[in-house]
Structure formats: structure tokens, C-alpha cells
Amino acid sequence: MAARWLDQREERAWRSLMKMQDSLSEFIERQLRNRCGLSHADYQTLAHLSEAPDGRLRSFELGALLHWEKSRLSQHLGRMQNRGLVSRTRCLTDQRGAVIAITPEGRDLIAAAAPQHLTDVRDVLIDHLTATELEMLATIGDKVHERLAALQREPSIHDPTATT
Image 1 (cartoon, rainbow, N blue to C red):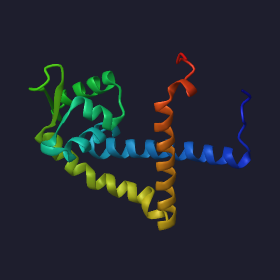
Image 2: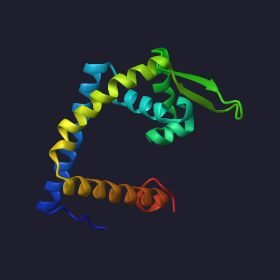
Image 3: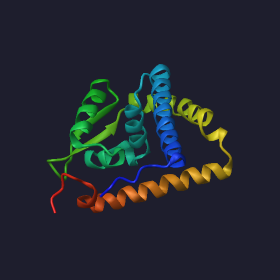
Image 4: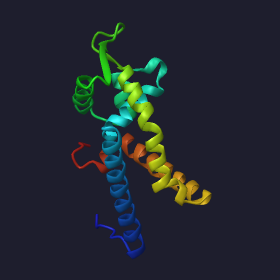
């Protein structure tokens, strides 16, 4: 199958999206590190745990929310546990699994970081878009997410390593 090259408009849109994504990620990462000593991965982990019932999630649930592989999650949680931000305990109903809980230190840190993070997100993105642009951004994000989910259900079509 021959490649369908991007036309000028399509290429501009793609490159603009990549530039925005990279710049936004770099900005957010830098702000979190400088202000709170957190990586974006730390922030996401603590945010999910702080929003969970009793501040606890099974490790597979947290991994699914973060879209992380099991090994990445385990390594990152180990580092966060060493810093006193989370704790890991064996699941009472499934000895193979673990329950991840936010510690008081982790809860204090996310409580301090969240308002600053929100201010940064507003400053760099939200407050610079119209209501129509925000709706369009959400629509585009949802549409791409749905397409990616569909591709995951049919990996053999787009995965050259898959066997048919």
C-alpha cells in the first residue's frame, strides 16, 4: 500500500499539534518540578489516588488510569514509596495483587500542587481559548481517543508485528 503523504494543510496541523504537545508537556513538567518537586508522572499518580475512594486503588486500576505498563508502574511506585508519597500493601482478596494508597505526605503535596498546576493550565491554555475553541479541542481529543481505542481492538490491521 502506497503512503498517502500529507498535504500542506494536513502537515501544518500535524506539526502544530506535535509542537503544542511537546511544548505543553515540557512546560508542565518544568513547573511541577520547580514549584513542587514533582514530576508530571508523580502528579498524575497522586491525583488519581487522591480522587479514589479512601485514597486507594488496586495497582492494575492505577496502571489502567495512567495507561502504563506493569513494569513502569512498579518502578515508579517504588520511587514514590521511597519518598513517602504512597504505600503498597498486599490485596487481602487477591494475594497476587497490591493496593496502592496515598500517604498523608502525598496528600499534602498534591493539595499544595493542584492549585498551582491549575493556574499553569489556565495560564497557558484554557484562558487563551474561546468557548468554541475549547469545545472543538474536546471534540478532537474525544474523536482521536475513540479511533485509538478502535485500533487497539483490531491490532492486526495496524500492528506489523501481529500475526494474522
